[in-house]
Length: 90
Length: 359
Image (tube, rainbow over all chains, first blue to last red; front, side, top):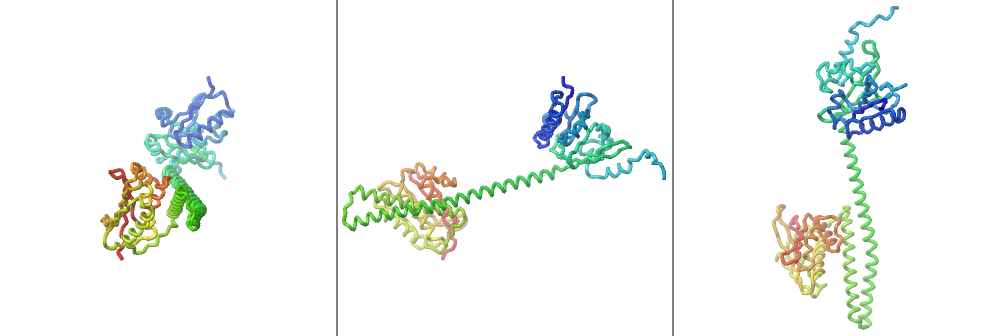
């Protein structure tokens, strides 16, 4: 069971979606390989999930586990900002 | 000197008033990413009622540079937001203020500009390729002319010398020399047409229009063609009185003789070729119509010929090339060329020319 469960909400078909997926994968692989599970959700394909999680804009990353949940949104290119936003820094 | 006084309870009120008046969406979140304040513009952006955002878990907004772009989650039209984030305090606690601007229209305009630019680049590329092709055609045609001319001169010299020295060439030799001469002449004309086509395409082909009696022109042209054959009969019908039109006589003569020569080339011996010049009325005024009707065996391919005429650059056979050149020349005069397969298997080529002004 992964220690960390991340959900990444994107709007499919946009350059922002591609960049977000690539950035978040890279950050996770560089810092916490084997410890995380990343679920990418396209809000165009699964709008009900976005509604359930009250996601208003993409890209939004929801740290589902560990609790309490945390979320960040916006530019995921800087790993320090993303990790501190998700409170994943040691 | 006084100690800093604790802020009054309603310290944020003036700022809220300012933020509410801003057109951009403004969302203030605390360190947990919970919304502490949102202006009306932000609520409308997300389709929420007044106060509908406060307390919501918006998330921790991250901007690595000056701005970043977000997609609005909505079931309607796609919407791109530009976000800026500043650190601030809200009710004395650290907070982040995110301002959101709808840049969908700007983005779309940019994309359209880029699309336009790409289209323009592609068109410029295509035009460059066309010019390169025209230059190549012109150069190739020009280079081919010299050896063809030498070939013809050599054959004609041989025939003349034989005649002068009273040498009787064997029939088969004289016949084949004459055939080579005819074919070289034909090749010469094709190369000329290739050159003309290239000039027409790159716009350097200039018409020298003058009032011309088309009856006279067609008569002369047909007579010259008749002189090249003894086994075909050319039947010409044309109006009795002169019919003037503003055309380039050299070019139109070339068209007429090209069409008639083609008909001769592809008709077997003994066949009749009908040429008819007549006046007609079109939507644009008075027209001259020249119909060349043959009984050529290839006539079944009439439709293919028609296709050749329609598809630019597809004139791969000699016939296609000369018809294509003729069509372009007629088009330069504002006229048109139609090819149809006749009922009895022959081909009918009809040239229509507007009569610009009678002289």
